[in-house]
Length: 308
Image 1 (cartoon, rainbow, N blue to C red):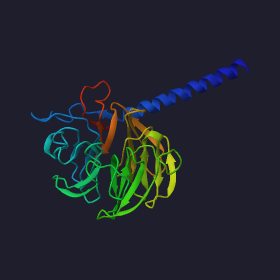
Image 2 (cartoon, helix red, strand yellow; image 1 turned 180 degrees about the vertical axis):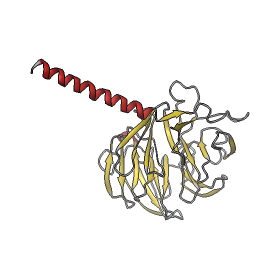
Image 3 (cartoon, rainbow, N blue to C red; image 1 turned 45 degrees about the vertical axis):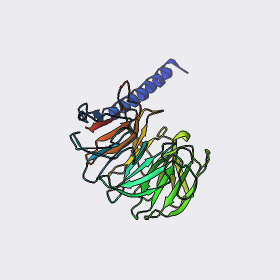
Image 4 (cartoon, rainbow, N blue to C red; image 1 turned 135 degrees about the vertical axis):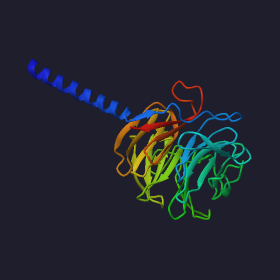
């Protein structure tokens, strides 16, 4: 190889590396942390670990945290406007996801007194509960560490059962068992901690198979379609109204990776949080929930990243 050609190749390599770094930088700068959101909690309420965060149809943000009361409701400015729930309702908060009609599914994976999923309205009224509190099982109405629930437009819902059972369970709108799939393993259709689950606009069921470091895609009958391994170790997922998929990962990538919800093509990355949960408001702002306190942080909190 001649010196001229070697110099040309080196110049090309430097250009590619520079372009890649600039691309990553531009994605990182696309979202900026809002240091004033949320506002300080009132006296008598302290933050616990926040495994999940969700949003209702009016745009209010809800934190599901491991302290009393377990549900905190915030307005767009970060002011706490309501709180509800009690340790008698949920022992160890985990999954928290809005339904198409505006209610919320919550899961409790505490080993000694959890293993339930509960549907509530936005005032905290219990609408439906499945599972036997404090009793782990693999039956049609028992769970073992349920992690998340996703509901389809027709009211059927899917439970990522999750921390120890490694299965997905489907129920009809009234809570009657329909079918299930999955077992412990790394083959297609198997799971190792199915930690987060949602349904996209095409009707596909996306399962964040966390310890296998992939998202698996299925039909609503449990038929395997594909898998994506470009989103790290998925702990939480959310798809916004623009069909963008956001994936929270506090263990490997330590941030939020976002991309096309149809193809899985990655478009960018949000740093500055170590998130287990994620939700996106109507303006494209991203909220993350943490169980570790974040990068160098002392508290466990939710954070808001403003889209520029």
